[in-house]
Amino acid sequence: MAAALTACSGGSGGGGADGKAETEKKPDMAISVNLTGDQAKPGEPVTVTLAAGKLAQVKVSDGKGGELPGKIADDGRTWTSERNAAPGTDYKVEAQNTDSQSASARFKTTAADKVNKVAIVPGKGSTVGVAQPVSLVFDNPVKNKAEVEKHLKVTTSNNTEGSWGWFKDYTGNDRVDWRPKDYWKSGTEVKVEMNLNGVDSGQGGGYFVRDYVTDFKIGKDRRLQVDLDAKKMSVVEDGRTVKTIPVSAGTPGGQKASWSGKMVLMSKEGTIRMDSQTVGLGDSYDKMVDYSMRVTWSGMYIHAAPWNAGKFGQVNASSGCVGMSDSDAKALFEMAQVGDAVEVTGNGSKGKADIGNGFGEWNLSWEDWKAKSALNGVAPQNG
Image (cartoon, rainbow, N blue to C red):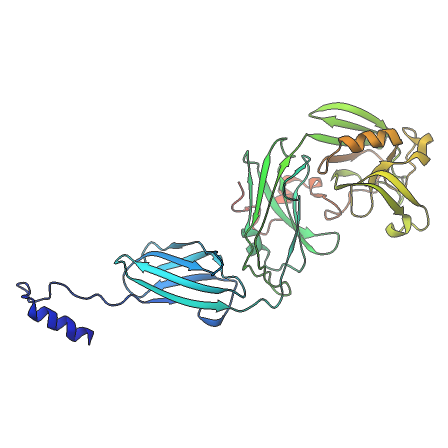
C-alpha cells in the first residue's frame, strides 16, 4: 500500500526529468533491543540497534525518574548503556534517528533472587584521621570482584594516589578497601561513589539493587606512636610531639602481648565492659574500662588502666591493650579522632595483626597492596 501511494503521488506531481517522485516516503524507523519481554535478565548493559540510518539520541528510563546513561557507536547504528539493567525494573526505550523519526520499546527485568548489600566506612559527612581507608564489607560473597571494582569510584580534592585491595574481613565476609599510597594529607576532601545497582556479585552473592555514596574529610595529621621498649606513647601532630604518655602495653611472650605495626584508631567507645573470656583469655579480667578506643577487632584497645598505675613507663604487663592513667587517657580521648594512625614498635609483640583485623593494610608495601586489586592495581575512575 505504501509503495502504491508513493508511485501514485509521483505520477500525478509532474516529476523531474528522471521520472522519479520529487518526494519519497522514508521507511518507518525500526529498532531492536537486546533485552525483551517481561522476564529479561538483569545485570548486563542495554543495547539498542537501528535497522537502517543513524541514531541521533536514545533514552532508557525506569519510570521512577532514573535513566541509564549510554553512548552511540561511531557508525551511528547502535547505542549501549554504561550501566547495567537493574533487577525488577520496568524500562522504556525511546530512540530518535537523524531524520527525526522515533521508535520505542519496553521491557521488564526479573527480580533478584538474592540481594547483596554493603557496609561502608567512613560514614557520610565524617572527619577522620590520616590513616583511615575507605572500607566496604559485603553481606554476601563477591565472586565477580573485577566487575564490582569497575563500578567503584574515589574522587579526592588533591588527586590522591590510591588503590582498591580485596581480602577477608575479620567476620569472614568479602571486603575491599581503598588505601592511599601514603597517609592522607590533612584537609583532603573525599567522595566515594559505588555505582552498583544492577551489578551481579557472582555465584552465591546475588545482585546489588542500589547505588551508594559517601563523602568525608581528612582532619588533623595525628599519629599515636607506642614504643614497647620505652613503655611510652608519643602523640605526634603535624610532625611535632605534643604529648608523651607513660604506658603499660601487653605482656610479652604469649597471647597477652600487644600487636605491633601500623594500625588505625577504629572507634572511640568510651566506658565499656571488657571480659577476657570474649577474646580467649579465660577469666583474666571482667571490668568496666574508661576512655576505651578500639585498635583491632580482636580486642586491642587504648584505654585507662588505673589498676596498673605502678607499671606505666616501667613494664608491659597488660593483657594486650595499651593502658595509661585516667588523666592521660581522658586527655587522649578528647584529642584523638577515628582514623588516627596507631604505630606500635619495639620488642615483645605478637607480630602484626591480620589485614582484616581492623585496618592492617598499612603494613603492606605499596606494590603488595596494589597487587590485591582485582584489576591488577589499575582501579579505573579513581581521581
